[in-house]
Length: 63
Image (tube, rainbow, N blue to C red; front, side):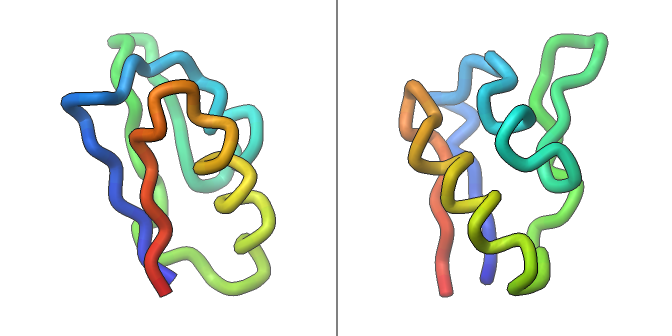
């Protein structure tokens, strides 16, 4: 599985970080960071929840 984020859409609101904190992080600088661009299958449910709950639909999960 591969994660991509459309940073033009992303508002760094940390909803994804709440759903998948080992994959997404909003730092003190106010920007979203993807900690694992290709997380293991054991994180699929969290990553898909993060993508589904993103208010701007900026997260895409492939594979």
